[in-house]
Amino acid sequence: MENPKDKIYSVLNEIALEMVGLEVEFKVERPKDAVHGDFSSNIALILHKTIKTGLSHAIRNARRELAKSSGKSSAVDFSLKLGSPLELAKEIVSQLGSSNSEFDKIEAIAPGFINFYLSKKYLFSQIQKIIEEGNSYGSLALGKGKKVSVEFVSANPTGPLHIGNARGGPLGDTIANVLQKAGFAVTREYLQNDVGGQVDRLGEAIYFHLHPDQKQENYEVQYQGKYIKELAVDVEEALAEDDGLSQGEFIEKAGKIAVKIMLDEILKDCELMGIKFDKVTKESDLRHKVPEVLEKIKKSLKENEGALWFAPNDEFLKDRETVVKKSNGQFTYFAADIVYHNEKMMQNDVVIDILGANHSGHVPRLMAIVKALGFDPNNLKVILYQWIRLKRGEEIVKMSKRAGTFVTAREVLDEVGKDAFRFFLLMQNSSTHMDFDLDLAKKKASDNPVFYVQYAYTRICSIFKKAGNLNFEDADLNLLKTDEEINLIRHLISFPGLVEDISQNFTVNLLANYALEIASHFHKFYEANQVITDDKKLTYSRLALLKATQITLKNTLDLLGVSTPEKM
Figure 1: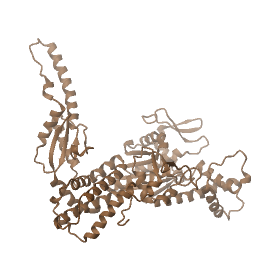
Figure 2: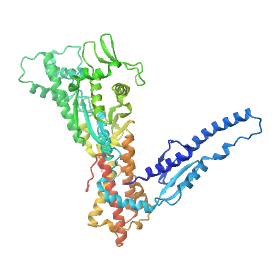
Figure 3: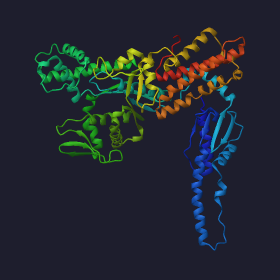
Figure 4: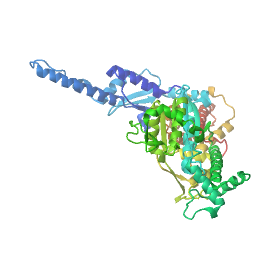
């Protein structure tokens, strides 16, 4: 479907090129207040500043020439030619003309904005297009088959998936959904850190749970909680036939078995969230490739005190260095990360890493690695998400019965269900801390956001069930005249533009907000207008509007990974 925002930008860009002979950065966006139109642009303000800067140079040059002359020559007063940003905006509006049927009005307002008001003829034409496109509505060719890797969750394998890490699940999955809608070929990836000291500590926790008498008095077990008892039972059963294992051998095998069990549990949790990964990579499989890949970045490596360091001294890390191989000859986790990003960058046009905010210090290292490997750092996108505080009304939930120190994702999923889990985690920008109200998420009322949105969809389904089969081609959309009808249409047609924006800036919270806006406008329409009436023509037109609403709402919720129940 044609995006009017793109058309506006394209036409304004041509005008800018004619005026100043170069491309300038300006915006075309939806105003916060509908009174300012469907789209607004700041191009006149930007062009005025650009032209004024150029003229000031010209004036100084003219005065300099006058000082050299006899004084009889006169300099052109360039400033009189420019005028104000508002006058420039009016000039641009005059160049746009009034013959474009997509707009009822294009106006210039102070201090220099240009507002565009879509025509009803255009709005009505888009309703029919939404109905024709159906599930494809909002699909774009933006990606043009480009490959994108989205890695998310990749939780610590030594314990259950906790609610903090789980925030990256719906975030990553929804970003992947939007990118697919925009035409990209997407691979959902999970990295399992199945080797290293943390795995040994997990094996020790299991061993000392089974053999508490062998634990030294001052030794502190790192991992605790009910899940360790559960793991100990499974590990003991798995090693039942391995008689005569030393303590070290038991710990090593117990750690490997335990992280395998925890991976299976985490992936099950992800499935309960509606997430299925296309690719799971194990750190142990990356380790043997380290020497070969390090050859690619040997210019950025240096030895110091028997260890091997990554020391590129570029704009990302400057004087900061990171150990790649310890003095004992063991490769670090970072070394495996180098291999992993080398593979992802080789196989994809864009690589997206979704990490907890506690990994912010790791981002410059990743950028430096990508550059050292010979790839464009701009093709690596790192999205950081903040942590979550669980509440029941005003009461803060502090601990998990199973984990002992944190609340697991499974506990929250079991309590509120997949739809509320995903929607609540997606409502706020990932860069902000959030409160998750468990009581509100379970509430069957309009103040529960996910219930409010799903109820709108269910309401539409019940109307169609009552109306029976219809041919929407018979609908005369010119009969739609009320404010509620027109406002609903204006919001429906913004969906493709929203998909495009999110595919570039990854702000999926805008998608959740959009679903709430559509539901709000539908509920207002429904309360103010009777759909099925004795006037068949008006009934057909309103049902066509509701069909477009149903399609848009379903496509939006599909991207969010939230179901669309026909009954509630």
